[in-house]
Length: 179
Image 1: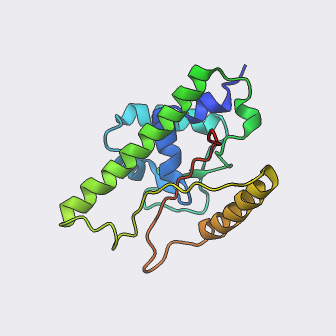
Image 2: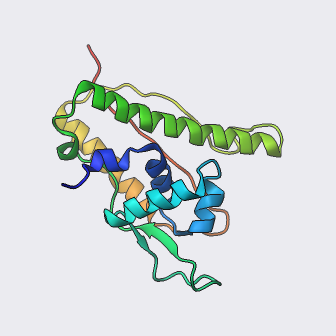
C-alpha cells in the first residue's frame, strides 16, 4: 500500500524540500546549503522518499562540475487536491495545516534573519506584506476568482530567473467564514 499524498507531502522535512525545489533545480549540496538545519542523512532519506513517489526527479538538463553530483527538480505538481484529503479527521486536517503554517513561519523567520543581517529590515523595499482580505462571493464567483489567480500565478511561475528577478513566494489560504 502506498503512502497517501497528504502524509507524504506534508511531512515537515519533505515539505521544505519541495518548497526549496519549487521552480528550480538544485544539487544535493545546494539543498544542504538551503536547509542547513536538516541533517544530511535525513535530507537524503526524504529526498529518496520523494523520488520513489515520483514527486522529485534528477534534472537531465543540469550538468554539474562533478558528474557524480545530480541536480533535482520537481517532477509533478505537489498541490493537494480536495480528493486527496477527503475523509480526513478534524485532527488530521489540523495537523496538516499546522505543518504548512509552521513551515511558512520558518521561511518568513529565515527571511527576517537574512534581511536583518544586511542592515535594517525594509519590508517596503523587499515588497513584503501580509494581509487578509474579506469579500463576498457565491461559489461560481469564487471559482472564477480562483481561476484568475491560478492563471496569473501560473504565468508568473513560468518566468525564468534573471537579472533583477528575485525568487518570491505567495501563499494563500481561503475558507468561508461564519456570517
